Length: 330
Image (cartoon, rainbow, N blue to C red; front, side, top):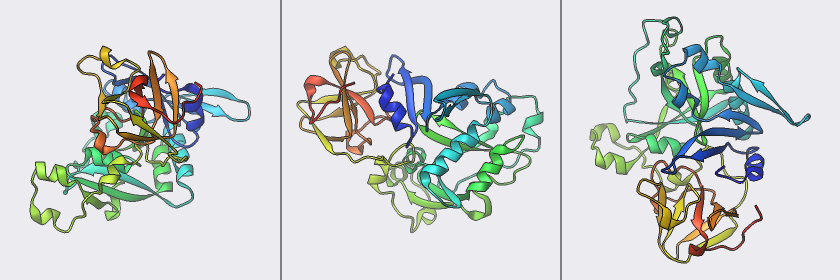
């Protein structure tokens, strides 16, 4: 597991926790997501959509429901989208709407409605679940081309859409972050995100805009995305604790998704490179195998220059490369 198990279970009460094994390059390989005690498959859409029926994809993802009273799990074969949505609503607090974000172009082009019913085509139809969004601004920034959009969607409307016999909204997990996708269906003329002109541009990613120049008239008066937004939490929910401890790198250090000493790393592994003397604000640290220490830093700092696949704020560092204020017992 990439996190101490007990820590992960406790943490799931306030944010999704991805429990996984990593492949040779350090990229997470499948696994589970624990969220408010319940267990869901990670990457269900990514790994299964191309050969499942649309019905199975949209409404039959397996999961395990946690009963706090009996302290037992019950296997389920339906209702995962509704369960995840309801849990996310609870974390956001009371309200009639739920804010979703989407990375796209300045002109967010949508596909025309299908002329066929995808539930009746006999094909998997996974490519019709094409309009993705996330409760995380950070995630939308990654996918911006170069704009970030947001929409306030009525919570009841989202719940009704996943409760349909033939749902038009899919909710699942991609690594640690939730994804909410809208079905391009003959029954829906405009994705719920864009319905009634509720979608608005939040900001423009200037770095991406500079790399791919766009019509100046389209970007006029658009706000620039703040750099601190790139450091927000990938799940879309803030950390419940304060970053109270400071770690300092003794020498140039690598942050890794796998507990492998720096000298054993091979080309292709996902790493962030920190200079000697770099400061890391962290919540908790545990000793790990192979002379490593596992650190929960709370967020990925943009200055670390981490690659796209390095999405987790939990990582390993060689023990002799870092000075920690405190190391917990694992």
